Image 1 (cartoon, chains in turn red, brown):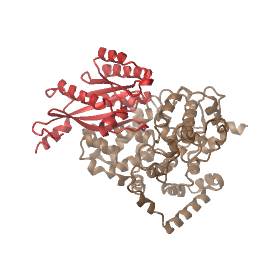
Image 2 (spheres, rainbow over the protein chains, first blue to last red):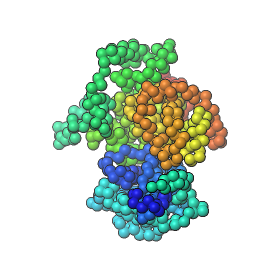
Image 3 (tube, chains in turn yellow, purple):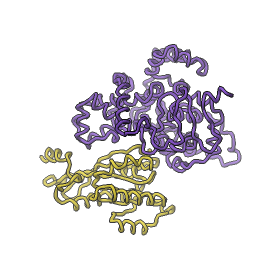
Image 4 (cartoon, each protein chain N blue to C red):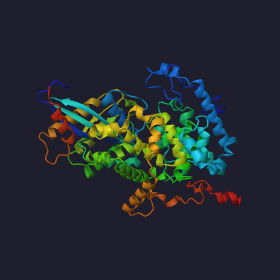
Length: 202
Length: 395
């Protein structure tokens, strides 16, 4: 990570995971942040928070990740987590059609209520459970294209595409925001103004 | 609790004992699989001294005297010496009596006695729209506790039954993630039916204000509690409150699960139990007090942290601050009752919805507490058991 200390730019990005109960939001984060997987991940109550960095060339993207509770009843808490998010991953379970329908609702809500600049990804999780597949990959791909989402099937269990989806989001964030954004709640905020000032010595 | 008459059925089915708790996975004294095995030999060596055992024995005898045979003397004692009871509860209910005392102080024992057969009916004959949701969460509730680890084992079945029964009993609330941790905690200390009535007592308000608003659509009571907590922080720790505002910390980011599960989610179990002892006797106030105590303990660190470090710090307090014997006395030092009332009024005024914090869906839920442990139930389909003292007296 410290390979290029000379011109290492640090960007903070708030990322939110949304999706139905039990689609594997927490498992995706756990795989990404700690490279671990547990079969019976404790239910998320309210929301959970993690940080993880991704290095793309000379830029370190530091994700502040909000992993939300999936149950519909917790819906009223969600806006706080997606408001101002630079990136969102909407997760469904490829073995449950209903979770795909719910994912579409989240996408709609983000398009309607969220920040227009939020970069969105759609993750079809549990891709290791091919025998139980209910959501065809073409169907999801088509939906993603129509809605300008970045799409991947992932497996938190096997780690397939997990790092990739976060890395791709990081790349798109950098591309979308080459220069400091005047209206920008997105990339550069209070936090790393401080840290970049203090950490440039080598 | 593990003794259950599972005599029916095993003869005609393939008997699958399932994964028997393996001796290779040591558990702590509460039954949680130990995460960190390095310290275990030390812990084993930490047996109680003779003096400590004797003290515990005396304590238990005092408690037994206070309770009487199966709780017969309890109410009398509480009426005569409420302060003694309060003090003893704050020191911790002996673990061997905890299940019984929890039922006595929560009013759930009365509900159980007033409603024979109702639980069974809810479990066996009723169907719930939440069944799939409950099933999905069953193996994700206290997954590190041996009682709940075995797939379709006694723990998981009991948990399912209690949650399903409640979702039928109160269809407006149904099942909400978080309830499982409350029910799961209770099931470690009492039977299914007892646990069910204790959940009813809490949510419908047998002794304290009803808490069903924690789980109703829009989570109205969570919103209220968080509003109150945020203001208490500002009041007691203005510097920290100011820092939270600057860093745009919303209390929901750390506090919603405190209230939704009454600390039963992701806190060390010895602390959870002590909080529950007090919570059941004194009410939700203790959750605010413990929250404030945690903030006070870490105050000087917290005020220095930027957002991205502040949130994790507020969700993972250092181990040494979570010692109940240190944390609880500090918690009691916050006298919050009056503040809480004032803040509740202010919250209600702001929402311009006079004294209606139960939420909007309560068309069929009537919370009028006619006489302490009295309430009505909302099971639409079964012949309505109206759980009132009056009814009982008539009969």
